[in-house]
Image (tube, rainbow, N blue to C red; front, side):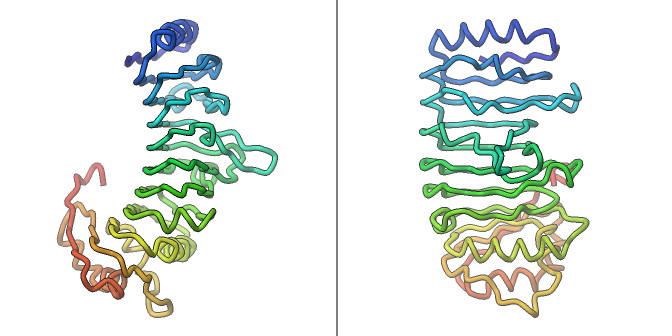
Length: 274
């Protein structure tokens, strides 16, 4: 079921369509809202396995709060774009802990109300992808708290890298890490957070970065020890022009100083997507 809804007055229709779909054991659902109303999901669906929600709040001018009361016990894949997570009195938003079967979580251009931190607590989560907002960074930046002992792949993209904390189990379980930071200000702050990430994820086997991330890393390598990436087997560099990569030999060698057997590969990406 893939119903796109591009008018605010369609919410009543959305409600009835979803009610019909859920009563007929829908398994995969993709919806694009302009004005998301949480009451559209006021009922449960024991068969739903995949849910992709996009709220075009940039068009509507109204923020869309992602509800904390969804009852989808079989959900394994959740993709959210342009939503706002409501934080509790402690300033923490924790919207995913009730999805006990969740395997893959994609968060795209979302924010936390009052810009505190987002808690991702899920025992079965294996794949996590977060793309931060590229607009109003001071309002949309949030820290990430992770309690995901089964997490194996983690992808992060944004103008600023988020502070990361939580249980030690998530950092030891992750094997594939991708970091894309397009930073044009506060490079010093991002530099130290990036180094902290590399220390936390010492057990990774695959690391993918872009030349923007290497640029952040180039701030000052003489005063810090290289990361202990002793299990690293693959280092991939994303770039729109392979000639750019040679400018960052020092940063690449820094990453590989304790990973002599790792393969290095350049990945060419489209300049418009880069």
